[in-house]
Image (cartoon, rainbow, N blue to C red; front, side):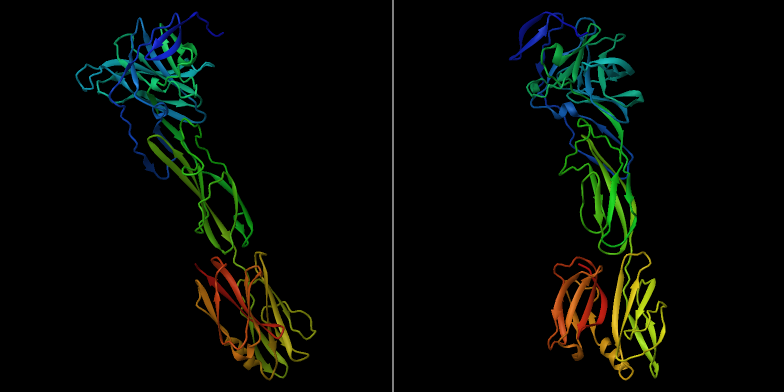
Length: 485
């Protein structure tokens, strides 16, 4: 049951506070020397844990801090600060502003023994069950914080309180520091407690809304792990890949200072020059074949340290099939068909003379009629695409036709901002066509009396495309080209 006391109103440093009649009178004084903060953030790559001094209470300072004394037998004998945590962590000690005198001169007062403790926290944000404790030596360091470490690191998995207490075996009267200048920060967080005559009191509740912050910071290690699943890991161009994030990282606001813009919690890299991308889960599609080493970086933005861990999963985007062939005249009406396609697994020959389709790679064929318009359709081994190339076969001019086709040239390869296509006179009045790997037409250029056509790559991203020439209703030329911007 909550404690109830009769109340009395008194003045403190110009602020009207309500105190319980059986609690000590708090009489802070201004500490004129500024608290020393260290803004440096060390960067660690490929780590699985991150040790940070979690200076949450210090980060809330709005003015000069104030100090008050501690006394074992008649006054405040312990101070505690609550930290909300959920996960896996290790407490190494505390970084505390605890002074042996107020002259700001280090070393002119003898060290004292105090006790640091870590507690579970009750429903009123007060220390309850003690988890661990260590006696520590407090030095006269002037107006500086000092690190007070536990004998052995303490495992933490829930909200906890750290405390600094006067030692019964070696009583002394050090000065503790509070951020009383932030009474009106409006958060009402109820994080601080004071021990008086063996009982803990929450400063906000038991001192009627005094939202002070005691300048003690946990030195804390938290684990972070980058882990994600990819499905599927082998795809055709433009297929959607799903990336599911199963990472673990401390996202408690008192510890990790991430935000959605300048300090993202997650960062995806798809190894294709785009991004970075910052959603929790995501999908992605690649337009160009290749192997991509995808990566997910998990970030921890601390008060004294930034840490991150990256994991990687490779993704394969299959190459697609491109059909092409030549023909050797063997005499009479017999021809040898010579496949020169790339990435092809299946073959389908349509000889254009009414004869059955042939499925071998390099068939011989006796044509029934001439001229014959031969088309070869190929598919790749991964089921990504099919592609067709057609050419005219006539016994009396097969070599001439082959030579005419060979005069069509595309350069440079790879192309950047543009490329050129040399057109032989026999294809004047035709059409130059540019398509992507799935056959979508991107550009169509009429061929008049032009022997050289310049094609701009605006609107085309880096990847593989096909340049074709259509003439008299037939596709007489196709060549693959790479655009690399």
